[in-house]
Length: 160
Image (cartoon, rainbow, N blue to C red; front, top):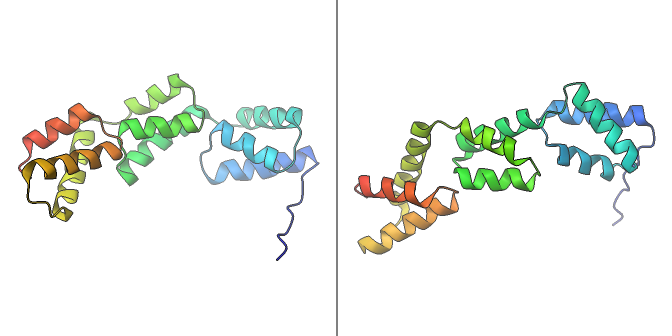
């Protein structure tokens, strides 16, 4: 069971073309592209020059990535701001851009999403004790990355 060895890229133009395709397919963080270039076998100076060319060409933009990531994870997966912030930190996005991206999430839509998530989860919980049920819903919402004060407000306003 031999694993096929990946061909290392030595030509800078080939690496740039491949990296452009990689970035055009989906928004990427600089660190993701940097890791991929190292995986392809490029040297550190070649990696940095390729990344600067990608930025100059508009293929790589950290702010655009952070905004797309934040709105996508919120709308598609229903993540809260805490979980989105952690995800961006893992991708090594600067704090300033993380804050900008989180500002794009509308407060009303945020609370509405949390209410929907809690209501959906409440249907699946069979716990009879009101306090235990409320605790389970709170823990679930916390695991989705929502802030505890907002969770408590939503739970207080709903009759679950």
